[in-house]
Picture 1 (spheres, rainbow, N blue to C red):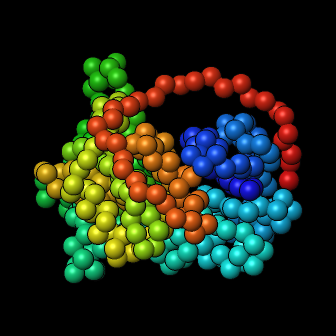
Picture 2: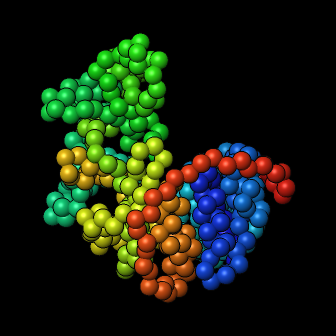
Length: 346
């Protein structure tokens, strides 16, 4: 069976290995592609390709042609996954199963953090998540007003783009510039002085939508979930400790949040919910309808999320799942020699 991973982030190499090392000893041939020929996960693929720099409908055309040319059975998309969800029928017509949420409107909503907040605020009858105080701005005047409004409520302030992954664009706003003592200490790269943020944002009359919101001081959790449309099989809360420490915890409140979300929205395969506590209240950061960057840590629970998601996609029955909790883990860098074997430009 042939599986293709298009442009992904580096940690997908762990998921490729897990699919290969599946409990059923099923054989897969892994295809990978990326615009950067040195993308590390390509080293774990049987066949690797350099992607053309396309987007939108042109990229969909490329994906369809790639699947037909290489007789792909399963497509695991990351790049353009929202648009791919809208075009699922085109892939199904050529016999390709796609590991993406088939509800394209839900995919589009979850791709925008502000729209997720708006949706959950409107659906008050669900009471799924507490939402941080926030404003959406696209000019420096509104940024300043949002900052002042949040400060008056006693909040520390941060901001981030309404679309994007990981910590890209995230900043915590400081009231003052660093002192010399702080300059010679350990730098905290995600902090930015208020005046400097205003100076940068004023470079343009308008800029892409930015969320200005209360900074949450408590512990952050990432909940990795495995599900079909009908059933949530597992929800693994992964606590982010100091530095690179992560811990898999049996946290009833967070597991119930995941179940309540799935009961309403029926997201299949793998999805991820990120929350952070503030005064003992878990507040939503974002929801990702895909494998998260840290999913390989949650797989230490004994659940092979990537492979089991493929089984769900294929309509196969899963055995009972009993995860292990109380596991603390971290990671270190490891050298990987980059080989040029079997690489082809497209």
